[in-house]
Image (cartoon, helix red, strand yellow):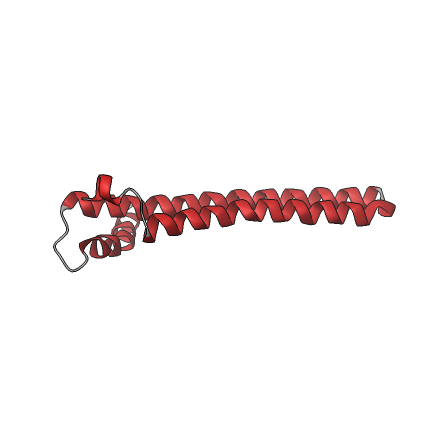
Length: 113
């Protein structure tokens, strides 16, 4: 438990330094940026996990379908690739949201001080 707490503090410490911008950051500003970094990281982890599950399920089902109907392999493969692109786009959207939260946070003026 102590290792987890220490690693969490060390992982979130740069957020407090970035929040300061050369000045001494107030505790609420440091907490805001630490929570922002944690939310972006957690969101990316969930999106990557869900995307990987979706892609694995989609590819597995496509292979089963091709094994049952080899004559329809071309159509199944096309539909599979289109589905994979859609699943991957959702993960990329979460990456974009994480970048916005980390580098151009629209909530800074409201909560960050």
